[in-house]
Image (cartoon, rainbow, N blue to C red; front, top):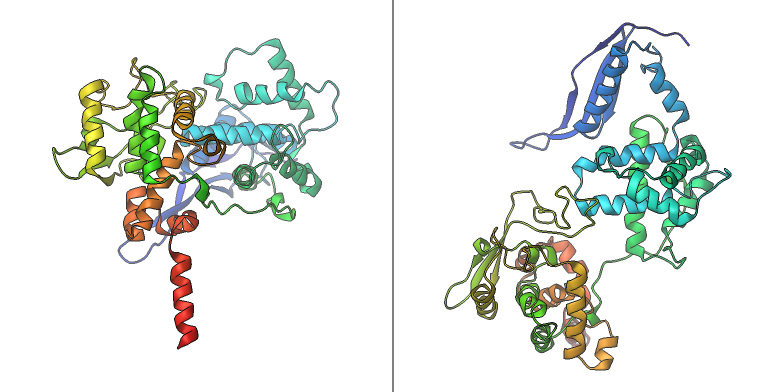
Length: 460
């Protein structure tokens, strides 16, 4: 291989696409440019972070005195790495590249998906550890940034060495059987039963993105997932109508919550009320502050939502706590959403503040120590409330099976009350198209209206 030490680097070029008259061009990619022996080279990346990381690697190689290959434009170490890159190495690289740009729940879903796929994409190498050991090592060590990794035990190091030796080279994924094996793995749960369609779709998206990352880096010529005809029943995302409670059932549940524990239930009651009367997501309720609440003495009030506090494993959060503070779902970091609330919820929130006060940062719902309620505790209180409020048959049914179902009941109520879809979507924080697709089966009166119109047509 002919090599050269004559290397020159240029700045990163930002590539944009026009958005129309008067609109700011949209950034679509970033191109790293350099020359080797006066031959121009370039590599394009979707994010500026990836481009900067790649350019940094090139410059580091040049500073270390490495010779560059004029054909590929890469230093010798990177040429070798490209030829020997394994799936395990790619997956680790992908996680580390995207970690800073992802929310805690996204990190958790990403690493969980890769922990299903990685053990499958291995060869027949002796000394294979137990599958549970492999999964635990991936989640707790390999798929965590180096500065967050715990000191590795001898068992962890043994698993890592086996993965490095057994992981298939990326070139093996050109054979559809390996890609199919990975898709089969994510279509099943750990107990071997079929995974939900939405779970499969989420994990497949991660697999697809990692393979696209390999294509972007030039380590695969094309995404091999497109060659495999593997289909799973699509999930519409529609709400199960059987889970939606009536206003009377919802109020009964909210009362029952106050009987779940000496203090836990009463301190959570207003939080559940926000999910039902304002249609808040649990993470939105957890982030609600007194400053966000307009609570007049009479009449309707308003909640101005601006933050959420989703719960995740502390391994994935930036704060090291179970709840990171984030912006509203599917909106910009500083975006807000106004939700008018009925007098009944205004009274509930005023009473809650008078009785329990607020946290140091103004949050309404927190434990005695000031932290957000753990999801396991919320689920436990909700389970008890259902047992107090429902008959045995209702307890065994999907009716309000999760606290989130209170939000579904709220949105269904608004639609059935005749509130226009755009207004409901604005209050719920949905797009109109998503709203109508998700809640299609929860809108009453459609059959009767359709029958009436058909009858009129038949008798005309």
